[in-house]
Image (cartoon, rainbow, N blue to C red; front, side, top):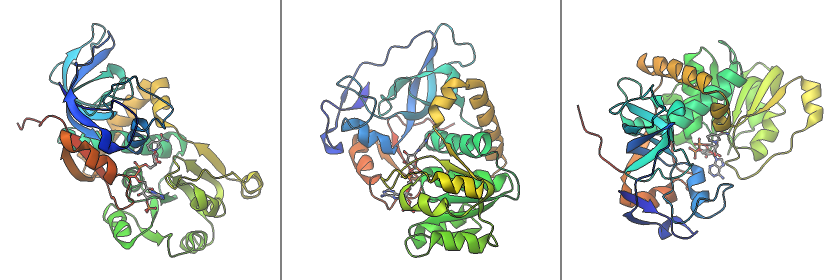
Length: 332
Ligand SMILES: NC(=O)c1ccc[n+]([C@@H]2O[C@H](COP(=O)([O-])OP(=O)(O)OC[C@H]3O[C@@H](n4cnc5c(N)ncnc54)[C@H](OP(=O)(O)O)[C@@H]3O)[C@@H](O)[C@H]2O)c1
């Protein structure tokens, strides 16, 4: 099969397209013909040897995929060849390739009416946001959610899920264009944290009460500001550190303001509770079919252009997801 191959650690330009063996599957796995493979921030870390997991060389990077099941392991009864699924790859790499292996119980059906390019960019953004907001944040209708990095993949998904569940959303981003994108995906209020005082504006927009919930994918100074404008019983959800700065949690503020901080790491939670994960995606599929979720794919790239996509994701200009298309999805 064709794949994008990493032979030694380095920047995206050192990746080459070549031939690799299709991955062998075990009894609990499925083999997928990959129609879409989304780009994620850790892809750039893995190819440079800067990620916790260090795959054996040579390897194909990429881990978030959607496509058609073409083979099932002997223990797999829930999926069949021909099914369209979205998944993370079994090994955490191997997605920028024509075929990839995934664990069957963690793969979910592509919602009716969604193509596999969209599905590959849907799985972890919406999965992470749903897990954070619903399972951990216990979001309620009429609560106010602040979304940092609101025009990113997780940010836009969080806006849409929160709106679908009846919450009010304050979107926070670094440019007018990004804020307009957040508004188009349902945000009620907008804050440009490059130009405005984040804490002050959140307090203004909540009648001085503060936010019930915050999705923090950014960290750094934005976290420091949000930890000073959370409401009594608020939940500040730590999802990522896109700013590159890991903040310190001020324990005195947690006490004085009676709010909670929760760490969110989606994939280990999925592996611990596959049944809950499948239930979450049944609900997400319903919301998608009801027209309440509109995942944004910014651009697609053929397999050989993967290095360009990996470089693009490092720029801070992106809204939505970038997707590699190793194999063209047949049209019905
Ligand atoms: N914990 C989990 O399970 C989990 C799951 C998925 C993703 N994540 C993490 O969550 C974060 C967001 O993921 P995503 O897919 O939404 O990423 P994304 O699409 O790249 O969006 C990240 C956002 O972060 C903001 N940002 C702030 N400072 C930045 C900087 N110095 N460089 C680049 N962006 C910066 C940007 O918005 P502004 O320009 O508006 O500030 C950008 O839109 C990532 O760190 C990712 O690793 C965690």
